Amino acid sequence: MTSFTEKQKSEYMKKALRLARRGAGCVSPNPMVGAVIVKGERTIAEGYHHRCGEDHAEIDALKKIDFNAHDCSMFLNLEPCSHHGRTPPCADALIRSGISAVYIGTSDPNPKVSGEGIRRLLAAGIHVEVGVCEKECLELNRVFFKYIVNKIPYVLVKAAISLDGKIAAASGDSGQSSGGISGVESHRLVHRLRHDFDAVLVGAGTVLKDNPLLTCRLPGRRAKNPLRIVLDSGGVISEQARVIDASVAPTIVVSTSRSSQKWRKAVQARGAELLLLESAGGQIDISELLKALGSRVSSILVEGGSEVISSFVRAQAVDRIMFFIAPLLLGGEKIPVVGGPSAEFLSDGVRLEDVLFRRVGCDLLYEATPVFGR
Image (cartoon, rainbow, N blue to C red; front, side, top):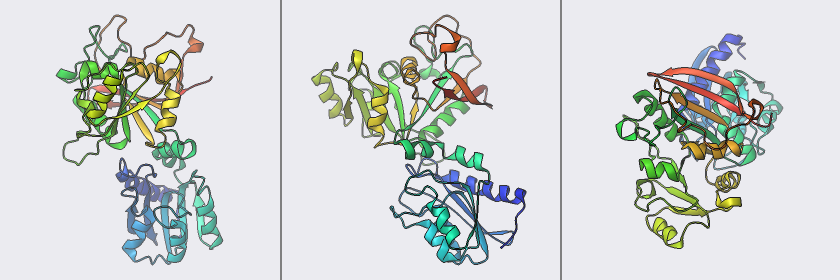
């Protein structure tokens, strides 16, 4: 068995992570996993999980060496599975391959695995090391880690905002007909997010104002359209809205008893699925919505508008925010990125942590994790 330096372990694991990212948008609800097989200090095979239901990363890599991994090491960003799902257990395949060592980024929180894959490898006399580039491995699959434990979708709130925190001018104009608030590079990144996430969600106000398609449009690549979700508690959007057309992409319209039977039938006639939920005041309960969607999607990209974002924040149902801050000043009090009532005191506000900044074209991308309950 080859003895690797910490630098070598990190380099091989980062290669596995790069491979894993190729499965973004295609493997849900499974995790993104990459595998690198090393003999001596030479990489002899690579693999990754291409699509849900297809070979896992370990098998994809092992096939390239005819499952003969004697005197080899594998670098894997996630613990190998130990249960029969759509595919047989990868831990057993590794044992049969004769592999000498497996370096793992992080254990699998899936209750069906939860350390069993590691235990099987150890019981077979295979050297196992867990925690190589652990932070990066956890970050890559944070959607999966939340969903597999809680069965509630991971929620990312995205918004394009002016430098003074507005998502539109006072008239409601968000510039959709002229390119929007943010720049071309930011728009391209948003479409990549739509490809990577299972669903994209907006409110009725956004549909009435912008009539969006909410599809994924990426140049030079085959894009996957997300499930489109529209929150319309009162049944006010037109059944002719572009987002309702299920021939383009699947759509769920979420409403309440406030909407009319005539409107519901018209929406369903366009091919959209109707989901009725109820709560106090006739508004859609976000917690109940996420529970209802848990059997359908593992991740949701919330694109607004202001009141929808506010409803997710009030429900403490946001896992991460991404604000594209444009070099633009709009002034006034309308229309803030987070609507609803203002915090009375600073202590009532929602603090953010794990903050990241990066430039995207002329915009500044601000990413952070809300901290609720403090």
